[in-house]
Image (cartoon, rainbow, N blue to C red; front, side):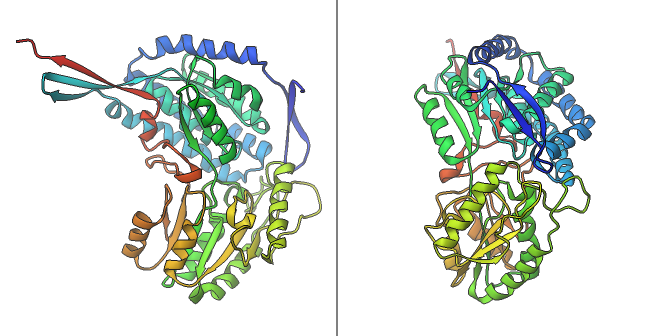
Amino acid sequence: MSNSIETINPFTEKTLKRYTLMTHQEAEVCVEKANECFEEWKLVSVAQRVKLANALAKVIEENQDELVQLMVDEMGKVQSQAKQEVALCAEICKYTASTAEQALANEPRDYNQGRAIITYQPIGVILGIQPWNFPLYQVIRYSITNLIAGNTTVMKHASNVFGMAQKIHSLYEQAGFPKYAYQSLLVDGETASKLISHDGIKGVTFTGSDNVGKMVAEEAAKRSKKTVLELGSNDAYLVLDDADIALAIETCVKARIINNGETCVSAKRFIVTEKNYDEFKLGFKQAMMQIKMGDPRAEDTHLGPMARKDLREKLHDQVKKSIAAGATIVCGCEMPDGKGFFYPPSILENVSPNMPAYDDELFGPVAALIKAKDDNDAMRIANDSRYGLGGGIFSKNEEYAIELAVKHFNTGMVNINGYGLAQPNLPFGGVKNSGYGREHGGFGLKEFVNIKSVMIAEIK
């Protein structure tokens, strides 16, 4: 196995940089350094950790241009969306900092022999294994939360965004965090998997595919180590009988192509009732075909290239298998010629169970269009999935939509008459094969802490 790896610009297909991978022994030394740092970091006041988190927010904002350039160059993110990601990460730092002292404060309680204190104590080094599609956000959302809680972190980033991995490491140092509080490890997947068993690792947070996530959880569970998993999804967006069709079309196009269609919580299955199916299909097709695909640096580009050649090939294979099983093409679905790992905005219809477009996650700008008999049938189809990360409902009856979202839609997040990515003040995560645990919104502060009861008996 090669001990080096190169990053490739998905727009130009040219090599950006070659990196030398750490050996397993070198990675273990980093874990040991993180453990040594933890023994001091856990004693630092939450108030001081909060100051450093706010300093990190400022450093992120000051480094916007370089961070945006890395996203555009390493994974083809459209420049305007890269700027939004930078801003989101700064806000996550600020919001988490604003809630941490209250969230982690000791809680006094009485018990039958006297008084008690509930305290939230950090547990040690948290291993993060993160993907490439939101190369700054995925890392910041878990790492800053754990650092404020008093843990230290080591992180394995996706190999095609190693430049971002190194940059994040430097951001933490610029903000004034202790040298080994946060570390980006340039390691391969095999080395990261081996680190799970290291005695110094106390918990693991993973974002990626459900198959790999289950293996990570299994390795951690063998050693009684907690995990937080944010896995894939094939989010359903329901266009109900009373939906505003123009709004649904505009929103669904945005929700499918955002981040070049490579978003775990983007819209993927579009479930439309018979009443609105033809009107929605016509408008959806027209809008998708007007999407401008091209240079991610250009201001008027809506859709950049996919992040890697193999990812585009996998997506096209899923499309072909779905067509072979009976799905039909509404638009797109052809591999374009020319330079860059582009895939056109595409729609498949007549999508049904036992097709990749129905059962699996299409991680690219391909929409699965599904006709439902009525609202109840649409809800049934939406829940007919092994996933449960996000979803959406379009209905003019807001109270009805809220009831469906709360009581019937089996996902971790639901959008009503709109689409939004992660919000700093809201939890993010899913159910079923989309994983468990929640990050940011304040909830991540307590994912990897020891909730300790201290009981003080009254002396009589």
